[in-house]
Amino acid sequence: VILDMIMGEDLNGCQIYQKMLALNRDQKAIIVSGYSESELVIQAKQLGVTHFLQKPVTLSTVTKAITQSLGSS
Image (cartoon, rainbow, N blue to C red):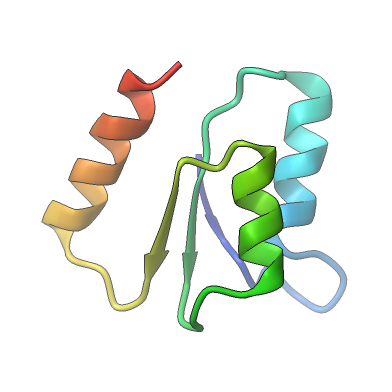
């Protein structure tokens, strides 16, 4: 799954990923944000997010991150 770090007023990408992990511990995720790497991004990486992509992203960057994410265990 690709998650934006800013998801609205009440939730962020890290919180959504935590909820997803509660349902499926093997869930893969990539975080995308228009902001630089933050404490929340670091926390998400510690939970298992495979990549942090800073906007704007290119199709080739997203494709590479997806391919690497699906290849990691």
